[in-house]
Picture (cartoon, rainbow, N blue to C red):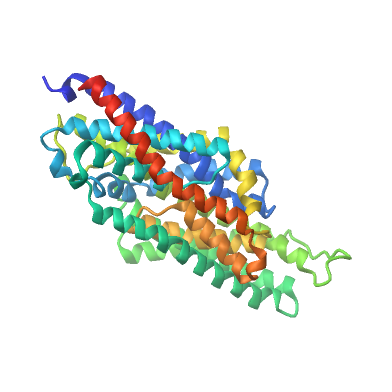
Length: 421
Protein backbone atom coordinates (compact mmCIF):
# COMPACT_ATOMS: atom_id res chain seq x y z
CA UNK A 1 0.00 0.00 0.00
CA UNK A 2 1.48 3.36 -1.06
CA UNK A 3 2.10 6.19 1.41
CA UNK A 4 -0.44 8.37 -0.44
CA UNK A 5 -3.19 5.71 -0.26
CA UNK A 6 -2.33 5.01 3.40
CA UNK A 7 -2.32 8.63 4.59
CA UNK A 8 -4.46 10.28 1.86
CA UNK A 9 -7.14 11.67 4.20
CA UNK A 10 -4.52 13.02 6.63
CA UNK A 11 -2.70 14.75 3.75
CA UNK A 12 -5.91 16.45 2.54
CA UNK A 13 -6.87 17.55 6.08
CA UNK A 14 -3.36 18.96 6.67
CA UNK A 15 -3.41 20.66 3.25
CA UNK A 16 -6.77 22.30 4.05
CA UNK A 17 -5.53 23.47 7.47
CA UNK A 18 -2.23 24.82 6.13
CA UNK A 19 -3.98 26.33 3.08
CA UNK A 20 -6.40 28.13 5.38
CA UNK A 21 -3.44 29.30 7.54
CA UNK A 22 -1.65 30.61 4.43
CA UNK A 23 -4.85 32.37 3.27
CA UNK A 24 -5.15 33.86 6.78
CA UNK A 25 -1.65 35.30 6.32
CA UNK A 26 -2.64 36.76 2.94
CA UNK A 27 -5.64 38.43 4.62
CA UNK A 28 -3.64 39.71 7.58
CA UNK A 29 -0.77 41.15 5.55
CA UNK A 30 -1.58 41.63 1.90
CA UNK A 31 -5.20 42.76 2.13
CA UNK A 32 -4.09 45.39 4.61
CA UNK A 33 -1.83 46.77 1.87
CA UNK A 34 -4.70 46.77 -0.61
CA UNK A 35 -6.93 48.74 1.77
CA UNK A 36 -4.13 50.96 3.13
CA UNK A 37 -4.51 53.72 0.52
CA UNK A 38 -8.25 54.05 1.15
CA UNK A 39 -7.78 54.31 4.93
CA UNK A 40 -4.60 56.44 4.68
CA UNK A 41 -6.39 59.02 2.51
CA UNK A 42 -9.22 59.10 5.07
CA UNK A 43 -11.74 58.28 2.32
CA UNK A 44 -13.07 55.37 4.40
CA UNK A 45 -12.63 54.19 7.97
CA UNK A 46 -10.85 50.98 8.98
CA UNK A 47 -14.23 49.41 9.78
CA UNK A 48 -15.60 50.29 6.31
CA UNK A 49 -12.37 49.01 4.69
CA UNK A 50 -12.76 45.66 6.43
CA UNK A 51 -16.43 45.32 5.35
CA UNK A 52 -15.57 46.17 1.71
CA UNK A 53 -12.60 43.80 1.73
CA UNK A 54 -14.57 40.92 3.29
CA UNK A 55 -17.20 41.05 0.53
CA UNK A 56 -15.03 41.77 -2.52
CA UNK A 57 -11.95 39.73 -1.56
CA UNK A 58 -14.19 36.69 -1.20
CA UNK A 59 -15.98 37.34 -4.51
CA UNK A 60 -12.66 37.90 -6.30
CA UNK A 61 -11.19 34.68 -4.89
CA UNK A 62 -14.27 32.61 -5.74
CA UNK A 63 -15.25 34.07 -9.13
CA UNK A 64 -11.90 35.01 -10.71
CA UNK A 65 -9.34 33.03 -8.71
CA UNK A 66 -9.14 29.96 -10.93
CA UNK A 67 -6.84 31.25 -13.68
CA UNK A 68 -3.77 32.10 -11.59
CA UNK A 69 -4.04 29.04 -9.36
CA UNK A 70 -2.83 26.77 -12.15
CA UNK A 71 0.29 28.87 -12.82
CA UNK A 72 1.50 28.67 -9.22
CA UNK A 73 0.73 24.95 -9.05
CA UNK A 74 2.53 23.67 -12.15
CA UNK A 75 4.85 26.47 -13.19
CA UNK A 76 7.68 26.14 -10.65
CA UNK A 77 8.24 22.42 -10.05
CA UNK A 78 8.68 20.12 -13.06
CA UNK A 79 5.93 17.44 -12.58
CA UNK A 80 7.76 14.83 -14.68
CA UNK A 81 10.52 14.49 -12.08
CA UNK A 82 8.00 13.59 -9.38
CA UNK A 83 6.23 10.69 -11.12
CA UNK A 84 8.25 8.03 -9.27
CA UNK A 85 7.85 9.61 -5.80
CA UNK A 86 4.56 11.57 -5.87
CA UNK A 87 4.49 11.73 -2.07
CA UNK A 88 7.45 14.16 -2.26
CA UNK A 89 5.17 16.69 -4.00
CA UNK A 90 2.65 16.28 -1.17
CA UNK A 91 5.34 16.85 1.52
CA UNK A 92 6.71 19.80 -0.44
CA UNK A 93 3.38 21.55 -0.94
CA UNK A 94 2.42 21.03 2.73
CA UNK A 95 5.82 22.44 3.72
CA UNK A 96 5.41 25.40 1.34
CA UNK A 97 1.98 26.32 2.76
CA UNK A 98 3.14 26.04 6.38
CA UNK A 99 6.40 27.92 5.69
CA UNK A 100 4.73 30.80 3.85
CA UNK A 101 1.95 31.03 6.45
CA UNK A 102 4.50 31.09 9.30
CA UNK A 103 6.56 33.83 7.64
CA UNK A 104 3.43 35.94 7.02
CA UNK A 105 2.45 35.54 10.69
CA UNK A 106 5.92 36.81 11.76
CA UNK A 107 5.85 39.68 9.25
CA UNK A 108 2.31 40.75 10.21
CA UNK A 109 3.25 40.76 13.89
CA UNK A 110 6.21 43.06 13.05
CA UNK A 111 4.05 45.26 10.82
CA UNK A 112 6.11 44.52 7.69
CA UNK A 113 4.16 44.72 4.41
CA UNK A 114 5.74 41.70 2.69
CA UNK A 115 4.81 39.90 -0.51
CA UNK A 116 2.72 36.75 -0.15
CA UNK A 117 3.73 35.79 -3.70
CA UNK A 118 7.41 36.00 -2.70
CA UNK A 119 6.64 33.89 0.37
CA UNK A 120 4.97 30.98 -1.45
CA UNK A 121 7.27 31.03 -4.50
CA UNK A 122 10.34 31.09 -2.22
CA UNK A 123 8.90 28.20 -0.22
CA UNK A 124 8.19 26.07 -3.31
CA UNK A 125 11.65 26.80 -4.77
CA UNK A 126 13.21 25.90 -1.37
CA UNK A 127 11.54 22.50 -1.11
CA UNK A 128 12.15 21.77 -4.80
CA UNK A 129 15.87 22.52 -4.70
CA UNK A 130 16.54 20.81 -1.34
CA UNK A 131 14.22 17.82 -1.60
CA UNK A 132 14.38 17.01 -5.29
CA UNK A 133 17.53 18.72 -6.53
CA UNK A 134 17.96 21.98 -8.42
CA UNK A 135 16.93 20.26 -11.68
CA UNK A 136 13.36 19.79 -10.40
CA UNK A 137 12.81 23.56 -10.29
CA UNK A 138 11.72 25.18 -13.53
CA UNK A 139 14.09 28.13 -13.29
CA UNK A 140 12.62 29.64 -16.46
CA UNK A 141 9.22 29.91 -14.77
CA UNK A 142 10.87 31.32 -11.63
CA UNK A 143 12.69 33.86 -13.80
CA UNK A 144 9.42 34.87 -15.47
CA UNK A 145 7.78 35.34 -12.07
CA UNK A 146 10.83 37.28 -10.82
CA UNK A 147 10.65 39.53 -13.91
CA UNK A 148 7.00 40.25 -13.11
CA UNK A 149 8.06 41.52 -9.67
CA UNK A 150 10.07 44.23 -11.44
CA UNK A 151 7.51 44.87 -14.18
CA UNK A 152 4.43 45.11 -11.91
CA UNK A 153 5.58 48.03 -9.70
CA UNK A 154 6.97 49.87 -12.75
CA UNK A 155 3.73 49.35 -14.68
CA UNK A 156 1.51 50.28 -11.70
CA UNK A 157 3.73 53.30 -10.93
CA UNK A 158 3.54 54.52 -14.53
CA UNK A 159 -0.25 54.09 -14.69
CA UNK A 160 -0.67 55.85 -11.31
CA UNK A 161 1.58 58.71 -12.47
CA UNK A 162 -0.51 59.19 -15.63
CA UNK A 163 -3.86 58.93 -13.82
CA UNK A 164 -2.83 61.46 -11.18
CA UNK A 165 -1.45 63.84 -13.84
CA UNK A 166 -4.77 63.57 -15.73
CA UNK A 167 -6.67 64.34 -12.49
CA UNK A 168 -4.44 67.38 -11.88
CA UNK A 169 -4.86 68.67 -15.43
CA UNK A 170 -8.61 68.10 -15.90
CA UNK A 171 -9.83 68.84 -12.36
CA UNK A 172 -7.42 70.67 -10.04
CA UNK A 173 -6.20 73.09 -12.73
CA UNK A 174 -9.75 73.80 -14.00
CA UNK A 175 -11.40 77.17 -13.41
CA UNK A 176 -14.02 75.51 -11.16
CA UNK A 177 -12.37 72.34 -9.71
CA UNK A 178 -15.57 71.18 -7.97
CA UNK A 179 -17.69 71.35 -11.16
CA UNK A 180 -14.88 69.63 -13.09
CA UNK A 181 -14.71 66.87 -10.45
CA UNK A 182 -18.45 66.22 -10.68
CA UNK A 183 -18.14 66.11 -14.48
CA UNK A 184 -15.11 63.78 -14.80
CA UNK A 185 -15.21 61.53 -11.71
CA UNK A 186 -18.10 59.37 -13.05
CA UNK A 187 -15.94 58.65 -16.11
CA UNK A 188 -13.21 57.28 -13.84
CA UNK A 189 -15.83 55.14 -12.08
CA UNK A 190 -16.97 53.78 -15.46
CA UNK A 191 -13.32 52.88 -16.19
CA UNK A 192 -13.01 50.99 -12.87
CA UNK A 193 -16.22 49.00 -13.44
CA UNK A 194 -15.43 48.25 -17.09
CA UNK A 195 -11.87 47.00 -16.49
CA UNK A 196 -12.75 44.73 -13.56
CA UNK A 197 -15.82 43.29 -15.34
CA UNK A 198 -14.02 42.79 -18.67
CA UNK A 199 -11.06 40.85 -17.32
CA UNK A 200 -13.23 38.82 -14.93
CA UNK A 201 -15.63 37.79 -17.70
CA UNK A 202 -12.98 36.96 -20.31
CA UNK A 203 -10.62 35.05 -18.05
CA UNK A 204 -12.05 34.23 -14.66
CA UNK A 205 -15.47 32.56 -14.79
CA UNK A 206 -14.85 29.44 -16.90
CA UNK A 207 -14.46 27.21 -13.83
CA UNK A 208 -18.03 28.01 -12.67
CA UNK A 209 -19.50 27.26 -16.10
CA UNK A 210 -19.89 30.82 -17.45
CA UNK A 211 -17.79 31.13 -20.59
CA UNK A 212 -18.90 34.17 -22.63
CA UNK A 213 -17.30 35.16 -25.92
CA UNK A 214 -15.26 38.35 -26.25
CA UNK A 215 -18.12 40.33 -27.82
CA UNK A 216 -20.66 39.32 -25.17
CA UNK A 217 -18.14 40.06 -22.41
CA UNK A 218 -17.54 43.53 -23.90
CA UNK A 219 -21.27 44.32 -23.87
CA UNK A 220 -21.73 43.08 -20.26
CA UNK A 221 -18.62 45.02 -19.11
CA UNK A 222 -19.93 48.24 -20.71
CA UNK A 223 -23.31 47.73 -18.99
CA UNK A 224 -21.60 47.05 -15.63
CA UNK A 225 -19.40 50.16 -16.07
CA UNK A 226 -22.51 52.22 -16.89
CA UNK A 227 -24.27 50.96 -13.73
CA UNK A 228 -21.20 51.94 -11.67
CA UNK A 229 -21.29 55.36 -13.36
CA UNK A 230 -24.96 55.86 -12.42
CA UNK A 231 -24.24 54.79 -8.83
CA UNK A 232 -21.36 57.28 -8.64
CA UNK A 233 -23.56 60.11 -9.97
CA UNK A 234 -26.20 59.32 -7.35
CA UNK A 235 -23.57 59.20 -4.58
CA UNK A 236 -21.78 62.39 -5.56
CA UNK A 237 -25.10 64.25 -5.85
CA UNK A 238 -25.04 64.27 -2.02
CA UNK A 239 -21.69 66.10 -1.95
CA UNK A 240 -22.24 69.84 -1.65
CA UNK A 241 -19.73 72.58 -2.38
CA UNK A 242 -18.26 73.85 0.90
CA UNK A 243 -15.20 75.96 1.48
CA UNK A 244 -13.28 76.49 4.68
CA UNK A 245 -11.35 79.71 5.28
CA UNK A 246 -8.08 77.77 5.01
CA UNK A 247 -9.17 76.20 1.71
CA UNK A 248 -8.22 78.98 -0.68
CA UNK A 249 -8.90 77.09 -3.91
CA UNK A 250 -11.98 75.11 -2.86
CA UNK A 251 -10.19 71.75 -3.16
CA UNK A 252 -11.85 70.35 -0.02
CA UNK A 253 -15.12 69.67 -1.86
CA UNK A 254 -13.18 68.14 -4.78
CA UNK A 255 -11.48 65.71 -2.38
CA UNK A 256 -14.93 64.83 -1.01
CA UNK A 257 -16.00 63.80 -4.52
CA UNK A 258 -12.85 61.68 -4.79
CA UNK A 259 -13.71 60.19 -1.41
CA UNK A 260 -16.87 58.79 -3.07
CA UNK A 261 -14.71 57.44 -5.91
CA UNK A 262 -12.31 55.77 -3.47
CA UNK A 263 -15.17 53.50 -2.35
CA UNK A 264 -15.43 52.16 -5.92
CA UNK A 265 -11.66 51.76 -6.33
CA UNK A 266 -11.40 50.08 -2.90
CA UNK A 267 -14.01 47.54 -4.07
CA UNK A 268 -12.11 47.04 -7.34
CA UNK A 269 -8.79 46.60 -5.54
CA UNK A 270 -10.24 44.10 -3.07
CA UNK A 271 -11.79 42.09 -5.93
CA UNK A 272 -8.55 42.23 -7.95
CA UNK A 273 -6.48 41.20 -4.94
CA UNK A 274 -8.75 38.28 -4.08
CA UNK A 275 -8.66 37.02 -7.67
CA UNK A 276 -4.86 37.13 -7.87
CA UNK A 277 -3.60 36.26 -4.41
CA UNK A 278 -5.95 33.41 -3.53
CA UNK A 279 -3.65 31.36 -5.81
CA UNK A 280 -0.85 31.69 -3.27
CA UNK A 281 -2.93 29.75 -0.74
CA UNK A 282 -4.96 27.34 -2.89
CA UNK A 283 -2.37 26.47 -5.56
CA UNK A 284 -0.35 24.06 -3.38
CA UNK A 285 -3.60 22.86 -1.75
CA UNK A 286 -5.04 21.99 -5.19
CA UNK A 287 -1.83 20.10 -6.00
CA UNK A 288 -2.12 17.93 -2.85
CA UNK A 289 -5.82 17.16 -3.50
CA UNK A 290 -5.08 16.24 -7.12
CA UNK A 291 -2.26 13.82 -6.19
CA UNK A 292 -4.26 12.13 -3.41
CA UNK A 293 -7.49 11.76 -5.43
CA UNK A 294 -5.68 10.26 -8.44
CA UNK A 295 -3.80 7.80 -6.22
CA UNK A 296 -0.39 9.34 -6.83
CA UNK A 297 -0.67 10.50 -10.44
CA UNK A 298 0.83 13.93 -11.08
CA UNK A 299 -1.08 15.50 -13.94
CA UNK A 300 0.03 18.55 -15.87
CA UNK A 301 -3.09 20.46 -14.91
CA UNK A 302 -5.89 19.99 -12.39
CA UNK A 303 -9.29 21.62 -12.09
CA UNK A 304 -9.45 23.56 -8.84
CA UNK A 305 -12.60 22.46 -6.93
CA UNK A 306 -14.96 25.36 -6.16
CA UNK A 307 -14.80 24.62 -2.42
CA UNK A 308 -11.02 25.11 -2.46
CA UNK A 309 -11.50 28.69 -3.76
CA UNK A 310 -14.17 29.22 -1.06
CA UNK A 311 -11.73 27.93 1.60
CA UNK A 312 -9.05 30.32 0.32
CA UNK A 313 -11.47 33.25 0.21
CA UNK A 314 -12.70 32.43 3.72
CA UNK A 315 -9.14 32.30 5.09
CA UNK A 316 -8.34 35.70 3.54
CA UNK A 317 -11.45 37.19 5.15
CA UNK A 318 -10.65 35.75 8.62
CA UNK A 319 -7.05 37.02 8.41
CA UNK A 320 -8.20 40.52 7.54
CA UNK A 321 -10.84 40.69 10.26
CA UNK A 322 -8.58 39.33 13.03
CA UNK A 323 -5.20 40.91 12.25
CA UNK A 324 -5.45 43.16 9.18
CA UNK A 325 -6.03 46.43 11.03
CA UNK A 326 -2.40 46.48 12.21
CA UNK A 327 -0.87 46.76 8.76
CA UNK A 328 -3.72 48.92 7.40
CA UNK A 329 -2.98 51.53 10.05
CA UNK A 330 0.73 51.79 9.11
CA UNK A 331 0.79 51.30 5.31
CA UNK A 332 -1.64 54.08 4.37
CA UNK A 333 0.45 56.91 5.77
CA UNK A 334 4.07 55.70 5.62
CA UNK A 335 5.25 56.11 2.02
CA UNK A 336 3.73 59.47 1.09
CA UNK A 337 0.92 61.70 2.34
CA UNK A 338 -2.30 60.58 0.66
CA UNK A 339 -5.48 62.50 -0.10
CA UNK A 340 -8.55 60.85 -1.69
CA UNK A 341 -7.47 62.00 -5.20
CA UNK A 342 -3.93 60.61 -4.75
CA UNK A 343 -5.21 57.42 -3.12
CA UNK A 344 -7.67 56.96 -5.99
CA UNK A 345 -4.92 57.23 -8.63
CA UNK A 346 -2.74 54.70 -6.76
CA UNK A 347 -5.54 52.22 -6.06
CA UNK A 348 -6.98 52.32 -9.59
CA UNK A 349 -3.51 51.83 -11.11
CA UNK A 350 -2.80 48.89 -8.78
CA UNK A 351 -6.23 47.33 -9.46
CA UNK A 352 -5.77 47.58 -13.23
CA UNK A 353 -2.30 45.97 -12.99
CA UNK A 354 -3.44 43.16 -10.67
CA UNK A 355 -6.61 42.33 -12.62
CA UNK A 356 -4.66 42.22 -15.91
CA UNK A 357 -2.08 39.94 -14.28
CA UNK A 358 -4.85 37.70 -12.93
CA UNK A 359 -6.34 37.50 -16.41
CA UNK A 360 -3.05 36.52 -18.05
CA UNK A 361 -2.18 34.01 -15.29
CA UNK A 362 0.97 35.83 -14.13
CA UNK A 363 1.43 35.67 -10.31
CA UNK A 364 2.55 39.20 -9.50
CA UNK A 365 3.02 40.65 -6.04
CA UNK A 366 0.09 42.84 -5.00
CA UNK A 367 2.26 44.46 -2.34
CA UNK A 368 4.88 45.55 -4.86
CA UNK A 369 2.20 46.66 -7.32
CA UNK A 370 0.50 48.87 -4.74
CA UNK A 371 3.77 50.28 -3.39
CA UNK A 372 4.81 51.00 -6.99
CA UNK A 373 1.50 52.82 -7.57
CA UNK A 374 1.86 54.90 -4.39
CA UNK A 375 5.44 55.74 -5.40
CA UNK A 376 4.15 56.83 -8.83
CA UNK A 377 1.68 59.22 -7.20
CA UNK A 378 4.41 60.52 -4.86
CA UNK A 379 6.80 61.09 -7.76
CA UNK A 380 4.12 63.08 -9.59
CA UNK A 381 4.50 65.57 -6.71
CA UNK A 382 8.33 65.39 -6.58
CA UNK A 383 10.90 63.34 -4.64
CA UNK A 384 10.41 65.44 -1.50
CA UNK A 385 6.90 63.95 -1.15
CA UNK A 386 8.34 60.45 -0.54
CA UNK A 387 9.48 58.99 2.80
CA UNK A 388 12.67 57.26 1.62
CA UNK A 389 13.37 55.67 5.04
CA UNK A 390 10.05 53.80 5.02
CA UNK A 391 10.60 52.77 1.39
CA UNK A 392 14.04 51.39 2.39
CA UNK A 393 12.51 49.33 5.23
CA UNK A 394 9.86 47.91 2.90
CA UNK A 395 12.52 46.99 0.31
CA UNK A 396 14.57 45.21 3.02
CA UNK A 397 11.55 43.17 4.14
CA UNK A 398 11.00 42.13 0.51
CA UNK A 399 14.60 40.93 0.19
CA UNK A 400 14.34 38.83 3.38
CA UNK A 401 11.03 37.19 2.35
CA UNK A 402 12.28 34.85 -0.40
CA UNK A 403 15.11 33.23 1.57
CA UNK A 404 12.96 33.10 4.73
CA UNK A 405 10.20 31.24 2.85
CA UNK A 406 12.75 28.87 1.29
CA UNK A 407 14.53 28.15 4.59
CA UNK A 408 11.33 27.39 6.51
CA UNK A 409 10.06 25.19 3.66
CA UNK A 410 13.24 23.10 3.69
CA UNK A 411 12.90 22.61 7.45
CA UNK A 412 9.22 21.57 7.24
CA UNK A 413 9.80 19.38 4.16
CA UNK A 414 12.33 17.18 5.92
CA UNK A 415 10.10 17.09 9.02
CA UNK A 416 7.13 15.73 7.00
CA UNK A 417 9.41 13.33 5.13
CA UNK A 418 10.66 11.82 8.39
CA UNK A 419 7.15 11.67 9.87
CA UNK A 420 5.45 9.88 6.95
CA UNK A 421 8.34 8.52 4.88
